[in-house]
Amino acid sequence: MNGAANRTWQRFRANRAAIGSMILLAAMTLGCFASLGWSAAAMRRTDLDAVRLAPSAAHPLGTDDLGRDLLARTLYGGAISLSLGLLSALIAVVIGTAYGAVAGYVGGRVDELMMRAVDVLYALPYLLLVMLLTISLGAWLETWHIAGSEWSRYIVLALAIGGVSWLTMARVIRGQVLSLREQPFVEAARALGFSTPRILLRHIMPNLVGPIVVFATLTVPQAILQESFLSFLGVGVQPPQATWGSLAADGVRLLNPIQFDWWLVVFPCAALAITLLALNFVGDGLRDAFDVKGKRA
Amino acid sequence: MFPVVLLIVYSGAVLLVMAAPGEGLESGEKDLPPEVLAEKRKAYNFDQPALERYFWTWPKRLVWDRDLPAFQYEDWTVVEIMRSALPVSLQLGVLALGLAVVIGVPVGVISAARRGSLIDHLSVGLCLVGVSLPTFVVGAALLMIFALWLRAVPVGGWGRPMQALLPAITLALPYAAYIARLTRTGMLDALSEDYIRTARAKGLSELQVLLGHALRNALLPVLSYLGPTAAAVFTGSFVVEKIFTIPGMGTHVVESINNRDQTLILATVMVYSVFLATFNLVVDVLYGFVDPRIRVGAASR
Image (cartoon, rainbow over all chains, first blue to last red; front, side):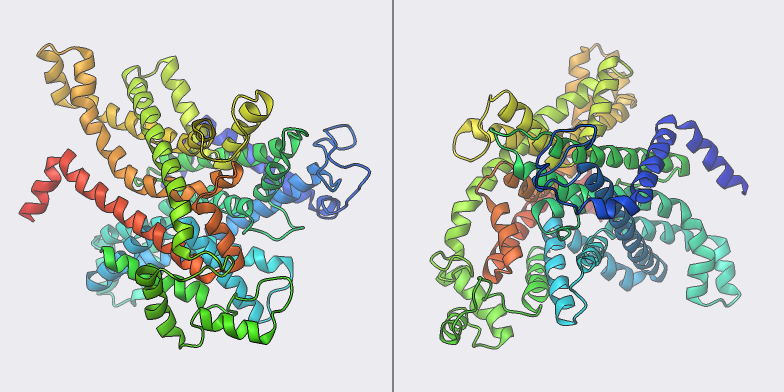
């Protein structure tokens, strides 16, 4: 570990909220994924003799309107939500970094044009765009006979959310590259006759690790949030697959003044809220540790 | 910028939804008889080339003739549907935006003025929670507590003031939290400036210093945040409208996208884009009024 990384780690470790959140997230992630062997099957098992049961010893979080165990569904939904968030953030980071680096490094007219395009995209109704993307990507997949499994919707969602979440990333990276480009070591690399891709990948990229890590961490909760909105609106994952958002939507749908099944709403919502809060804490902690300036994603 | 954005949005929507395979006319349970389908295709101009339909006939029928029906509700033209849904969403949006400012700014000011106190810590913590929580979690919580448990307000619907209360608060809270954060940061920055010391030195009261001198500068970031926020509040109402069963734009957006109701999708996308572009424009203009430096900078450039 070199000096800079060491200092960053020291700063991060001093942030108790971030470290606590990190441990909580690790536990949450481990719980969701380690239990997949049981929950993937248990979340589909209906039991019409145990419909809408309140939390008890047999069903710690209760059951839903088809008698499915809510603990299994929440754990499984967590695995889907978390992995989908990570995947979308990864897509967003790759697109955003590549786009921003090219715009910043090439500069001039190209930069102007690429950044105007980002401005225009910023001005679009975001949620609407994701929904349109989801539907049309799904339709295309169907004609190519790729669709059919419940996972096709998962992939479509990741692509759609990742495909619209890279804008802030691109702006930040462009700004960084713009200033790095003028540094003597880049000039030296150019003078040595290295190719542009090589300079970008070997000389500029290593200096972008800080902002990339920070914005990736802040994009994950954003992506999870987007997915939960889509699932809540019924444009998200396909049942019987579930995420925290779709579980919450099911719970809210079943809310009525006569039968008050609070557990169906409270547990998925709590899991989602705690995760988002923790991810934001970690992201803020990383930003302070790396000392990255810039707007929140 | 304005017409460019609209044209790009329009082309994007056409490319995304309408160019995708399948026309979306047949989404009922049963297959339509061929004659009916042929008539339907004719009624929606599918007998024309796609480019002509999307870039001439439909815009013309939407804006000038106003006789283009929605795919799903053939008795209603798209314009009629917008006319019934738009005011509802607008009222909700304006109410929520107002609430966000009215709650957010004072909380931020008090928090900054009493920095390090219990109130400050409490509001900073609450703001973080407010920013992180998804709207439907807040909405579901409010619904369960106030409508189902205390039975203080109706569960859903639209038309009476009491029915607007919970949705507006739900929609406003995350933005109120963010505005409070922005105001607090802006106030703390402003309060450490020299001109604040000067203002105090010439004997102004603390209230005059805070509201007359510091707040004016602290509001700048808030103002520039308001443009995107107004847009987000407006589009964010999808979820709130679903929770509280409000017959607004969001309901139509979700429905039209799920059914691939092309004409309705087009109309909703365009309405949203016009509003977004307008909000951004208004904020740019307002910004010049609040911060004279920007006007000077633009003139000398």
